[in-house]
Image (cartoon, rainbow over all chains, first blue to last red):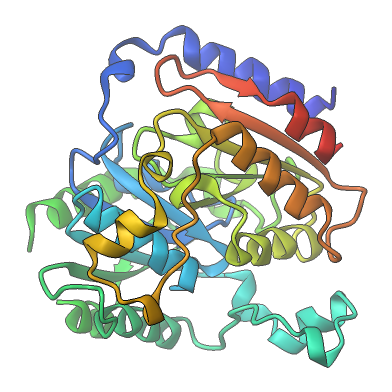
Length: 170
Length: 170
């Protein structure tokens, strides 16, 4: 057993040993919202947004991008489990801002026919606005859902509103 | 401003006010691992697996499924940011186990030509094994990466190993 695996199991046993009333939580988020953000190790959405278990859906991928899979998850979040406010949270110092799709293809020696869209971006605010717009214009996303656009600052822990994105999401 | 938005901002301000040394964290996860799990509101991977900010990548979608987007994220996690152990964690009482793709299409009144693969499943263990196998067989995932398959028990907080999946991922 690897050191990491052992540590995770030990931590998990400690967590489960004081699980208490969390066993009675419902699948539907009690605070009816969802956060889509980056997988970045520095981000802990439960901590930076004040979530307890049972409160909200958390969707994470490289960049916090509105990929097809993020859309699938958000649609399920809304239609099956009742969320009606969505936070899209990118962050400063994101890996996807530092590399181009071509850079990453090269690292993997990917030939042109097998190219992957790594969803890199050059301008954080612009990518956030594009992402919110993609959701707002999606045929299965009703106008009743509020979408907020924020950038998390890895230097301070602050969520900084990107008003242009939030205005689109209103 | 909605009540939820206000609460999130208040929680965030409290978090940022005692941010301290977290400003010095690196983008690369210090414990060199990643967790892919479900967006379910009851799951807090940082808590159930003992993560501090900076430790590990966390990728989440509906079901914790190995979608193309999850693969994109895991590949970036490994190649750009150095992770070499991946936990794939499904959970008990998952929404994707209770509905079929057709059920969800119907809820959205989706016509056959616009069908979405919602990545529903009927057997949790089997879906986990399939997901680990998909990663293990992926041409860009090297054999040096260890992949572990677990099911999180929403009734107890325990991570339960699915040996068949972990054996495939070894």
